[in-house]
Length: 336
Image 1 (cartoon, rainbow, N blue to C red):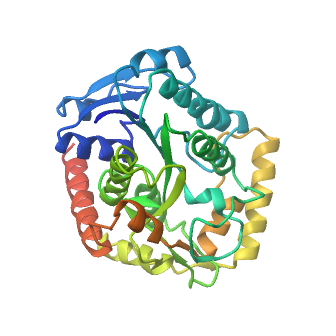
Image 2: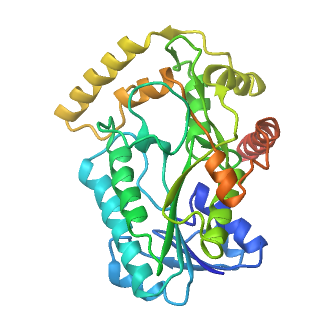
């Protein structure tokens, strides 16, 4: 395998790159920036934009496997910005794969493509795409995922990985935001606090991507399919957050708000922020209210069956590793 990883400098991308290097795979990374943390791994780094189709075609030459991880993430922003990166960018990656005779493409998607505002409890990949999306990230990823899966052929084998709430050491998004809001006492329990959700430890997510790629390059039973990825057992969202806070000496979340009012507040704030062209994300949105109040967990049986995915790092071990990393980060920051 000679791998090409878009977004290889990001949280998920870097984990995939590290595991590929550990396996002795030759890796090239494509991203907007140069990433010092990848230098010691001996990977080639290319800088550029997913919208530059000619550049992608040129630098993808000689690779047989592509991991398309790069995306514009977030629950707030302009529609055209999400569609440019996530839809047009994905179309360009597909084009470069075909132009270079790439064998396999593993696309990093999200369970948000099927989130339909209702509780999801143990559903599998037969769940249809949502008909109405509450954020442009989800809608753009749904379009891109369908494009990737429709592009599956005898020439280029494709599949999509849908990891849910990725966390672990090095996380620049989910955990830091939770901790910041917890310390500022700005986090409220939305809903009745009984909602169960999937979470995905970062190393397990990288495992899933690589197992899927190995499958596409051999038996190809994963070709043309999407796969939910998680720890294999959901957690109570608010209990999990409060356990994290307890280990970080942060007061547990005590304030509460019902899901309906939170959704209404999110709708009002979205309207105000849109009217006044505020770029900053509102403290509450409709999508966030629904995600915090509803259950959303999925079966991973298809991934287990098709390419042997199994969560290698348990939730308990993952939490221990996360706390150790956070402690080191805090000590380093205190010394600076």
